[in-house]
Length: 154
Image 1 (tube, rainbow, N blue to C red):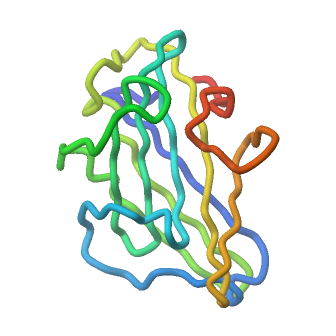
Image 2: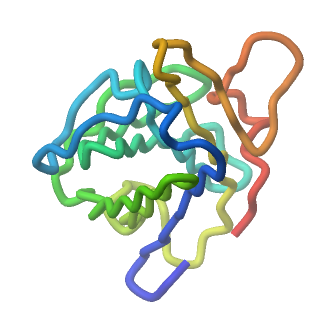
């Protein structure tokens, strides 16, 4: 975590980017349902606690934030101070998205906290099919909310 409670995450897709359906640029704003199309996600939890946050970053520049008390028990987090400053770079064989996570804007996350992160992506192909990517998948249907998928520690 950087001073001030910032963490920058960068997602890079390497391959035929022209085979992806990528949302067009829009003004930065909060939008629900981003996961229905190409979207990058970060799940953030303080180590040893059941509560966590979900942050969604769209290549459109739109974003969303959610707060959970425990596994899937929560809802939208209304805090415009979270604006992640999304930057996107697209080339013929690559799509990259960087977002600044403002952890200082998430209640209950102290600067010295040990964190567990789950980084994942929903990728939409040009035919509208979705695939699900994560640092770790559990057996069965993809479930980014499961705490056992929060494998990156900082």
